[in-house]
Length: 394
Image (cartoon, rainbow, N blue to C red; front, side):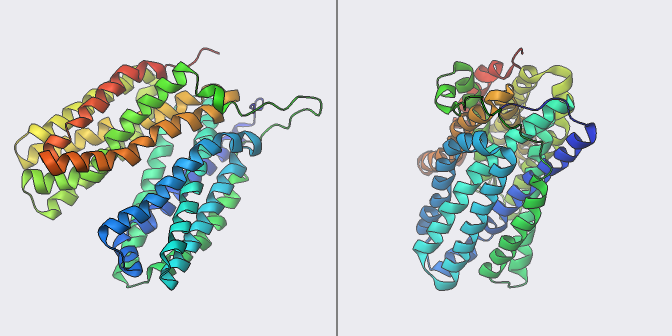
């Protein structure tokens, strides 16, 4: 797939707004029901361990969707691929609602697989579109797009909390999201950048995914994304527990520390574009890795609650830019963007699957603060692989 020539600035700005909507809606769709996992567990009569296995269905679907997304974006274009992912998510949430209403766990599991599959395709396609818009604007946009995803997760969590407070059954909430997704996403993707039609006599090329898996730079960018995804995911899952179990605070302060981390990461993504334009990807990624390292050490070794809270802030800032920069780097060449973003996402998302059980297992034997020292290894990997994010010379 190749990009089109110069487009009117108004059309590019319209596409920018559309891809922001895609990122926000992706975050909202994901978090609106994740925020109500206790209701999901109780509605299906599951134990906590059984709930973990059920949620693994969504992760498995996402992992399956990521390698398929490159060929799909190559064949359909980012707009149609985002819509396909959103529709898969819509069907999946509908099946999950039906599973809850009938207390059929297999039906709910099937719904989560379909939701995860849609999430994987949606994620790659909107990143490819975001990178194309970023190139045409001539300035860094990807961090703000990922900040939009973060804001969407906050909005989705708010919807879930409000529905829980009002005693709205989870199946009813899911039906509302099922109706909302296509109504918002379908009009938005129509404003994505146009995909050029191949000439009738032009041979159809493959998606290039297999070739991308053999490219050293692509693999290194994937490892960089893996490192920062592990850094981000570890905080998402364990910062609150680190405060409660490691520093002996209340659950309220644990939630405050998590809020510090998420807020700092969102602010870092909102402001990161300016830093990237001024200092370049490699310098900024390395600097944020050092900031994350400082925050992690304050959290683990600071010895007091205020220092640990300051550590959560620095950890969030440091974790904010590695993932979106990796998406930009993977999409530097428009002709290979879909394949490379698919490969980089497949590598990076491994962290979100392997990270929580790894730290949980270590924490069970050594304590949560000691277990989180494994994040130091991820940050070292991010530092070493950051050079791969240097823009391609075209």
